[in-house]
Image (cartoon, rainbow, N blue to C red; front, side, top):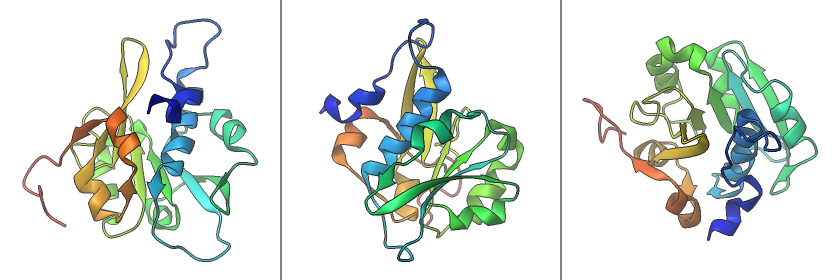
Length: 176
């Protein structure tokens, strides 16, 4: 089971010969995309992985995804200036620079088949789909299955087995 993420197995980001934190996170994004059953989209449309807010990846995301495909769709990296553009993406990395606007961003994506990923503390519990965390200098992730269900995304059981599972917090818990 662990072989599915072997190319991006969490490694210490402190080791000199290891990939950087954001190289690892870029590889995780690609692997997340491969282990989700995605609802149909426009034929021929690229698989857009978008960054909303300040870009912490630099060239790491572009470099790691260049020439890769998800199914029959070419991967494309987009950097967004406004949350309204996010509905045209398959996956949106919401930068921690947007933490003050997180609730509004997530609400604007409600009902869209968009995977939201972030690294802000509490991102998944606040309604984001996947939250990156660092534990003992290793990249880990939590999946909010409530958010995945709202977005119409089916995660592979292999991916779910590697994640910490969380649910929505607060008054909107269970809302759809």
